Image (cartoon, rainbow, N blue to C red):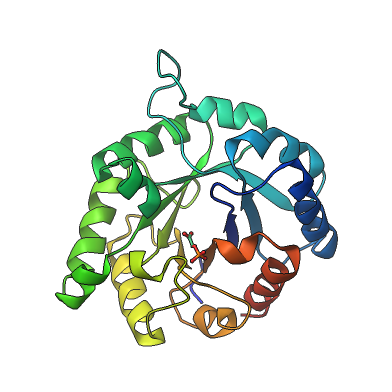
Length: 244
Ligand code: PGA
């Protein structure tokens, strides 16, 4: 492990109704004083209810996206200030599903991150190669290029986390080899403007593979999708991170 802060971040994506707040409560109860940061990013509709349900606990709440502007005529969008006002402390930006479904470019991600920082939120900036880019031997070129363009000016460990998420590993049950993860994380670390920025791995992290991934030198935690929906699964991943 590096000297950066450890973080287990859960991304609920477009999943979760009010009844599912029970999972968040169960997680907070099971980990009253975790040895690492713990974050849940529910859909925007649940942020304020989850923040209320988790108030006084060690589990933080975050958003999954924000607009680059602070306010204005942008129907359906949510600003970073609104997320902060709802109780969010962090926001995931540039997730590959946003890049693919909404055509988000790295330049836009940097603008969103700037807005997030101005609102006092920590941005979790995602980068990752597609399977065809990996097969073509372009992985490092792609992720380092995305990092260079997605990090806003003034990114430090106090306001930024970076997540490496190979697109082909998300929701597929497939993961890179430990050597492949290490290679990308080493390259990302070398390019970070502040070496204390936490580097998360994401893509099919489960209770069964978390410990070996967290044993990699430049992996400071995980961004977890499917396995963050249930307190039992996410709790096992948190326990693995605490032990790393
Ligand atoms: P997964 O998703 O854990 O379901 O693969 C990870 C992510 O997209 O953040």
